[in-house]
Image 1 (cartoon, rainbow, N blue to C red):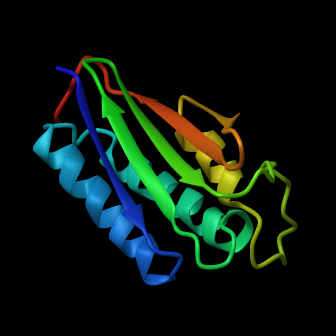
Image 2 (image 1 turned 90 degrees about the horizontal axis):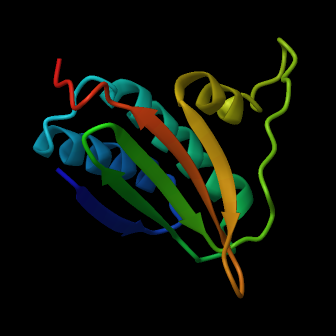
Length: 133
């Protein structure tokens, strides 16, 4: 099985929930429920980072999911070249934990520059041979 789907979202706060719903539907359609909560949380964090730090005004973002028998790859494309960096948030900080969560939940993540502008922030999740439990 090799599956791919993608959807573009407007630069609005409501798009974060829509990206989570899109991800949930795709994973269910593919029978990949085992890591669904981890992937949903990561798409939420990456979409939030895109709206706060990555998307130029009025530019949205693209969510792409690729899955095969072993791995789901989540990509969030935006219009900024600014590279995200995980940071250590203080206990009193109200934000700054998104990439720390992605790092903890995903089996790998990184950033790929696009030309002439923009980037992809990606994360990968092992699916244990397509386990649907």
